[in-house]
Image 1 (cartoon, one colour):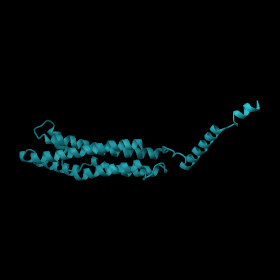
Image 2 (cartoon, rainbow, N blue to C red):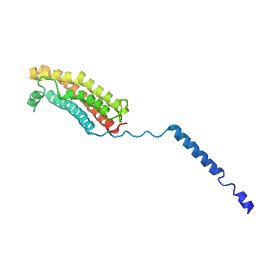
Image 3 (tube, rainbow, N blue to C red):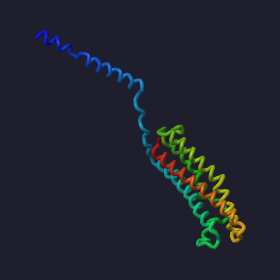
Image 4 (spheres, rainbow, N blue to C red):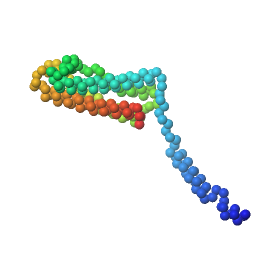
Amino acid sequence: MACGSSAAGPVGGPGAATATMASVHGGGLQAMAGPAAPPHPVPTGPLFSILLVLHVLCALVGFGAMVLTAVQAVRAGAGPSAPGAGTVRRYFRPGPNIAGRFLYGVPVFGFALLAASRHAFDAADGFVVLGLCLWVGAVALAEAVVWPGERRIQAVVTESWDDPGTAPGLHATCRRVVAAVAVEVLAFLAATVIMIGKP
């Protein structure tokens, strides 16, 4: 009996010792790494909800106005004899595109949301930085291409749309406006995904 007990080895032999060492080692690594970062808490309250609605509304109105400008630019390029020419004339009447300037409200209400989130979100968060970069790019395109092109289309449609000599320049302007708006739409979709996913 004594021999059988000795052959079995001591309780908690080499295998148990190895498991214990692994457990201690793993616990040490977890302690060194620290606890997992908790997810962002979701802010609540009427103020935050109102600011969020205004933030989204500015984005929808601003980018929606850009899309509408692109659609009307395509119709303007078709000439004054094309169907819907009266609508094109009304759309491109002289004056700034006020709805498009709603884009400037996006970061205003965005930073207001950060302040109202009670430190749930921060300006250094990745999704905030990415969204702001996309907004800067979209506004730069609007200021450099879309709105100047819109003013040129307004001038042609108002003063000399019936003159065939203006057609080549008008077509080129319309193409640039449409291309710029297409890029802005992609930026808007990317920003929407980023704001929802919050990477």
